[in-house]
Image (cartoon, rainbow, N blue to C red; front, side, top):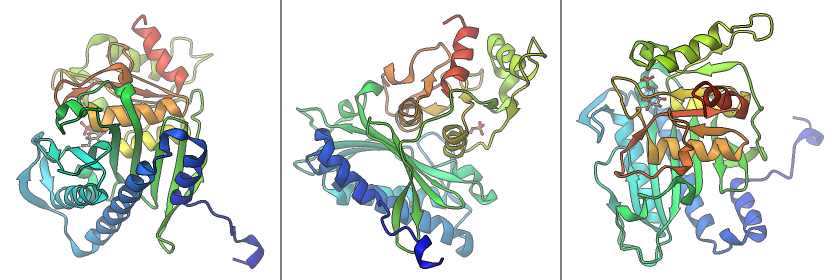
Length: 337
Ligand code: P6P
């Protein structure tokens, strides 16, 4: 670049959090910026490990399988270890839910402030194909009388204090909300810093893309089959153009596209997964929080707001419909909500 075209006042994630602390009493304790530093270290380390793994061939099955029976890939195990170590080292996380861990992890820190739920490498089944995967995180503040138990995380989605995901694609992106909108950052690998690239991101009100695994359609209930059929063959051809279909099969990649372009992402329940496939605490909750904060909506098959739900167990699943406000409302209207 010629000198005058270089931006010399970049906003790093660390600076962004410190500045938001000054204007946002909730984060004034500094605890959140401490935890965020551990989170962003984990994202950088996982990102670098994934990119290196494609070279040193860490791929392939590790033999073990995770809490929900999926075949575990070596990177799943590595990503999980990296994340657990970073959260333990932060000093202010007391409990941690991970998709890769059957039981709740409890760190004997005192005092601690947060309960963290995460899917360390979501979409990992696509890893060998070079598809973007990501780390999804939801944060709760510990209950005042917390003893470090599942009570700290079996909470209503509205009690989440922050949610984010890192997507390991051509670049590494981080989308973050603390309840005051969504801000997106991109990892500058030379600086080793996440740089603010999507300030105060808002989704388009609607966009003609639907994102669902149509291979499940024979297992869907009739009204759901009818809904997607109408998106493909609109009743009034003159007015409505058919929607385009985009499905990557990696939630972070599908949600990232939906946040940036708009449209509708859904994983409905079906005869194979009567409660849905995606997990409430570390997939549906954080993505619903981010989408709502970007002006969108997130509901389940029955039209209930995802953030009004409360899990009974840490690996509970939910159906999910999320995306642009008007596109989700098309589904709600279809089911009479
Ligand atoms: P299907 C990946 O395994 C995942 O958990 C999400 O990232 C993704 O949205 C979904 O499952 C894909 O599931 O059944 O369409 O392959």
